[in-house]
Length: 244
Image 1 (tube, rainbow, N blue to C red):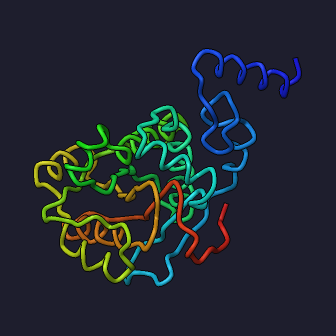
Image 2: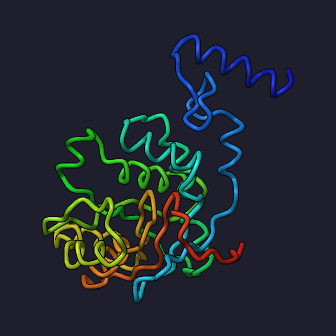
């Protein structure tokens, strides 16, 4: 059977059973139709914020935060569309792999750690989307033969205001000193993977302030931060070539 005919039949069956539509183009059927999924297939790239927070490790992403990628992130985060977590995990895993390949790790284990969300926000949403896709990315990379695990290394220790609408300077000021690594988590990591390198994970890179604060807290705890990896990044970025 021709692939396009199979896709149409599949979409028709899904629409009949579930009444769902593609988040990208609203075509009846799957949550992401084949045509929209193909727009998310380009290689990951270094997405440096402009301006870049001082000392930020290399940030890698797999999609521009627009169109289909933006619909994926918002659908998963704000509308609890859990069926989108697979594609977002794929994007994040692609960014992590690019970061690891570019840096060269000498075979050392990799720990993916999500930026922490405010507890009130997690309760309101009913799930932690960043942790979900971080675990998903780690699982995909392990299946591909990489020594990768997902660990919650960070927590918020100070009240952080909603970042929406804040510019780069305001975001940095809002987040300064807001994150820390609980000692019990560090002890467990030291026992299981004392030489591990850390990749900070998030769904979207905006100004880089959140990633830089996460990096600061991890390094203050004696950990080595290899890179930042996100599923998507906003348009105000310096896009450079990739190494693989």
